[in-house]
Image (tube, rainbow, N blue to C red; front, side, top):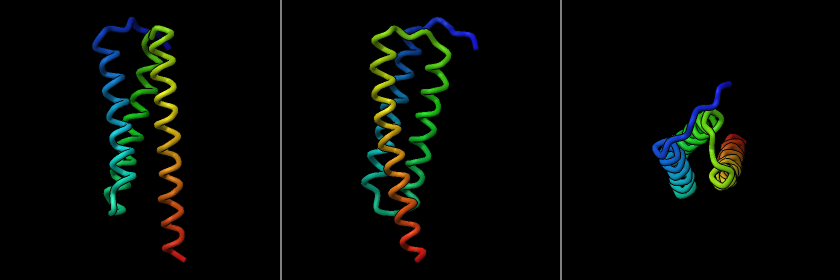
Length: 95
């Protein structure tokens, strides 16, 4: 895989995707209807995947990589916990 030079726009894009992922997780956590929860979890997962994809293809400064990577890992952990919570509720409802 070839690394590309990062531009200011690339860093802005990464921050925007990260903010979107955090927002989708927050909305999913607050949502009352399952379809809204699931839709926002899917959108959060897509934003996280886009982040991982582009982070692997651009040269980030050590500080930017650490900051973005740490925050992304937290968002992914929150998303995984939320996904597990939702699947647990679905299992309980099926019983």
